[in-house]
Length: 542
Ligand SMILES: Cc1cc2nc3c(=O)[nH]c(=O)nc-3n(C[C@H](O)[C@H](O)[C@H](O)COP(=O)(O)OP(=O)(O)OC[C@H]3O[C@@H](n4cnc5c(N)ncnc54)[C@H](O)[C@@H]3O)c2cc1C
Image (tube, rainbow, N blue to C red; front, top):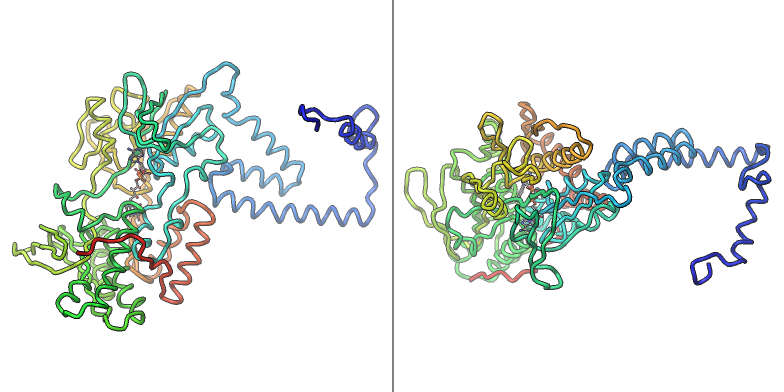
């Protein structure tokens, strides 16, 4: 190349070499099919075998990574490669030039601008679903990563490291040219001017406004302290990665404090852990703390007897895991007791301080429990973005702060604005409101649905109302212990645990994360160890 980007004379003369090997006037084409020698035939057979061998992992990897290459496209290219490299290449070219992305790219035509707020389960699926659509997508999140919340409790107990349950949003969308990621906090919406107000930009430039044609808001939810936000200081919630790291530090620091504590009463309070809320998250973390105390740490301390640690799981409802059938709740309670957890169903936390938790028993008495570590996993309230949107659209919120959307997941009177995931409940045409469970599958299905609806709109096609497909409910309790309710089939123990592992691995984003988590779990299973037991935050223990 010369410095003007053109080819030099020397380059040109070099590139003429293959021309001379083809038909005169038609560059690069052989005159007659070349005669195959035995060696050549062997080499070609070998080459074909290699291509076929590579095609199968390619299909599997694409299906696993689900996103870098479109699912159907990967299968098509893979199958074509199996039939022959030429066909594979042809399929790839066909897909490249016939995708929606190129169809909508007419010169002078402005592409639709889709702004997606929140890169969690719903937001990521929505952006992915638009990868072949003729739109420009901007994903705004205040974190530069998406968090796999179902495994965050394992970070809080040192079983996994933060990077294994999170994935940078830029990595996820690096092969999606129509999507860009913006790090910033969304603080408001101007529905009249179709603009999103973004603050906290990384260059500290103050407020920016993003114009949209279609807006998708999926800000998620957080735990609710039932009007006692002052408890949060003593009972951190397990919602964010920062929260998980703080909890990990508090749990591990409590064992360290017990090791140097000479007063038996005070040592007992260091070794008492209270988990508030016995939904799947509360059950999971209580089980993990018990395993940590009675199993992993037993041999690590000289003075503190970690076997004497108490884990209280406090639940206001009449039974733990109240979203599950009663028999599975009973099963889970029994499994927790075996691990050394005390489930306190029908009990309510009425006060939390630095060294005590006040718990009201079912018969109305209030007991003071000396405990230095309290973890909050109760009640859920929608992201503040729901209130912001509702205020602008003149809509009401439900008791959990969710905004109610119409059956196609858009705001009433604003078909260009979607609200998805934990922050929304879905109204039906007859006025009833479906409060779908606040779980990842709902958010993911809604994200995919919103993308599908936008694509249909661009093609002028109608869309059906959103319908949630409930595939079941899972909760793990500890090593080889879990419960599963799959379309009315109740499973407990090892099979449910194996199912739990498989499902969580499947949905975890990123091949590398899956591999690392499998290795970690295998190692923990075999050694009962937990590799990420580092105190990195400085918990205020007094
Ligand atoms: C500890 C824990 C364990 C769980 N375990 C399970 C489980 O085992 N199985 C299951 O199915 N579900 C589980 N869930 C529930 C599941 O994680 C949620 O239902 C799901 O995350 C909801 O998805 P979402 O997209 O609505 O919100 P999220 O995934 O929470 O994503 C919201 C995103 O919005 C961003 N955001 C919020 N506000 C702003 C703003 N103002 N500006 C910019 N960005 C913003 C956040 O940073 C976040 O990335 C669990 C939840 C928790 C907290």
